[in-house]
Amino acid sequence: MKPANRETPSDLASMKRASSDDLRLRRATRADARELSAVAREAKALWGYVDDWLEAWRADLTIGASDVERMIVRVAESDGVIAGFGAADRVDGVWEVAHLWVRPRFARQGIGRMLLDSLVAAAREAGARRLRIESDPHAEAFYMKAGASRVGARPAPMPGAEHRVLPVLELSLE
Image 1 (cartoon, one colour):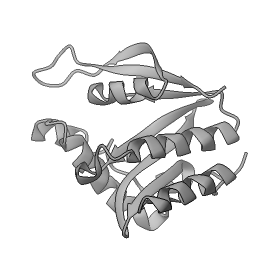
Image 2 (tube, one colour):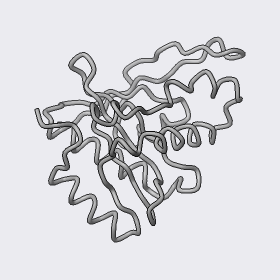
Image 3 (tube, rainbow, N blue to C red):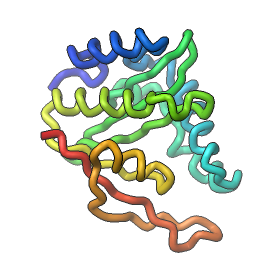
């Protein structure tokens, strides 16, 4: 299997497309980890979650330098600013989207789809046949529009929302 963060031919094609739209897609570096964590927290907060919930999710929204090395991590930049990032990881033999976040000021500009397409291409080139996505409820429609199917749900209760669940989706790469 290729090293997770090595650029592939499909990544290079995405970079060319993105550059023409004032965006650049690149692989993440260890030095990006702190900024990627900030992007994840900003994006999650956009959905109006209360501060207590965001604090409870702090560890899940933190990207470490070792995560950048272990996972496939792609960054979208606009004029040197990280607009968003996506990460895919192989867990127990199953490829999954570990992160996909876009800063609020860059939302609804196609960046999330560009990042997802890059993760799909990289996972496919690594031999994946499907990509599992445990989605925030607010992001489910985005993934469904990209071709994912709901295959289940995972309980994810929070104070005041004891019946909250996370949609579990699957995206075929065949």
